[in-house]
Length: 414
Ligand SMILES: Cc1cc2nc3c(=O)[nH]c(=O)nc-3n(C[C@H](O)[C@H](O)[C@H](O)COP(=O)(O)OP(=O)(O)OC[C@H]3O[C@@H](n4cnc5c(N)ncnc54)[C@H](O)[C@@H]3O)c2cc1C
Image (cartoon, rainbow, N blue to C red; front, top):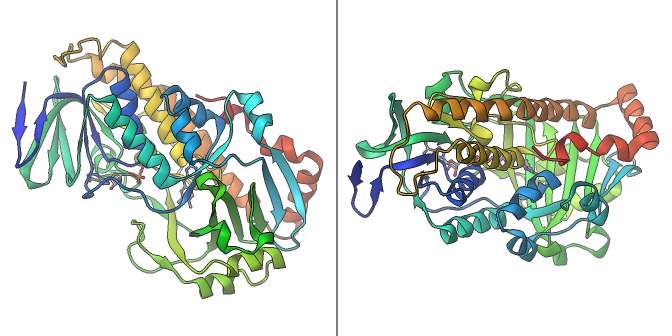
């Protein structure tokens, strides 16, 4: 067994190496450890953390999280919105409603929940630690890898290396693992900017507080609001068209509230009041890749990609983290059913098992991920429509609102 000693860590031969400890990486660590794998995860940050923003979790994702034993932990921190309502950002008129709550839970076997990202990340981290079998390493920047016939060697900064049977690149949209595997450049800017904010409901006037998901649609913009943290906070995302200067690949840019208010000044009074009631915004320029075209973009040899590393997408179907969690669940299932984790002592399996299993994982995941990516792009065009196209959208929503908003192919699960 190969051992690598550093100042305070021991990296021993592991079956599954994971680059990145975001929602995708932690989900993969949890799913694989639950299946009996020895896992080592490497996160470049000094501590495991997530930025302050919300995430919608649709039934396909909640079902997986429940299956990982997280039902009670989730219900300590989530909000359970009763409706997803679509309104015109210009007139304020309600365009359509999808009933959530018990209705959607009955239909798909799990509810539709909303959560603070940090809460989801923290409960995944706690679950990995409780599970055991996964070594979680921080301050470990992954710089590259080498594949051989029998293993994969992960290179870390400061000339450290660690051996494993397979490597999962869960290092986000600007993945260095993807860069080495596919050499297909970086995600491209979309010209869409996301302003995000969290505000305590107690700080909002009564008429701006909410228990539901609301999407406000207008020409070249939309806003989504929903409760998180047991309903005590509201998450807001305002998407507008525009460009920003500088490196926007990291989540550390403060958004200018006055600038956002100016951009959205033509919206209806209730939305305007909401935007003006929020003092602090963070800003993210949205970059994506085109929908996946083959399984090679999801895995090759002993290296699998997962989450944003494989399929960075527009957030207009609210599925980026969801697809990372689905990737993780399917990956662990394929590896377990393929017999990779049979040896509880971590001893090596036949060297040729892994590439075939990862091909199988890729075949199971890429068409669904591609469909989600493509639907999110299409939603952007519909959400931001103006003129005749907006009129047609509003008429269609009035006639068939709930049927258009429901997504059985997605919410039923992978
Ligand atoms: C405005 C907006 C709204 C969204 N809303 C939703 C929603 O409602 N529902 C939903 O499901 N999704 C949503 N998403 C998408 C979701 O946020 C992402 O798809 C998801 O967080 C991706 O997780 P990940 O683990 O793949 O990547 P990341 O969260 O980017 O994690 C990557 C991790 O890898 C680490 N890392 C990077 N490089 C290295 C390296 N070289 N070495 C070691 N570690 C490294 C990073 O520090 C990070 O911890 C939204 C996104 C946006 C922008």
